[in-house]
Every structure is written in structure tokens, then in C-alpha cells.
Length: 91
Image (cartoon, rainbow, N blue to C red; front, top):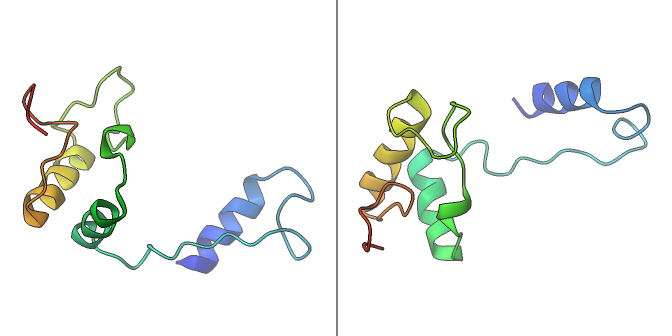
């Protein structure tokens, strides 16, 4: 997966930005599960309200698309309140 991501990034980047002489794309969390990402991020103080998961182009996250459902499941499994979908006043 890492090689494929690097190749895709190189194909889309302007000439000379990535490649043998340019910076390498590193994805250390690629092998993490959604649960592990939430646990790690929460421990590091990630501002989850700024993290966008929704696949829809809206002003707010829908909560019902597959990406939003994955996010909800990961937060639920971690026992962490997701500020994006928390009721008003709950954090």
C-alpha cells in the first residue's frame, strides 16, 4: 500500500516535487485500525472537531455515509465522545 500511495502522489504532483530526488511520502498510520487511530489521536490531544470524515460536500458532516458510520463506530469502540456528532453541550 505504501508503494502505491507514493506512486499515486508522484503521478499527481507537479514535475520535480516528488520522486527520486524529492521528499518521500510516509504513512505510518496506514496499518492502524480506525479504533487505534482514535485511541492514539485522543491520547495526543487531536482536535477531532477539525477532522473531516464525511464523503459528502456539505457544511457539516452527514453522519450517515459509510465514512461517517466508520468514524462513529471507531469512537464508540474507543469509548470516546466524538465532538462532531455529540449532542450540544456534551464533550
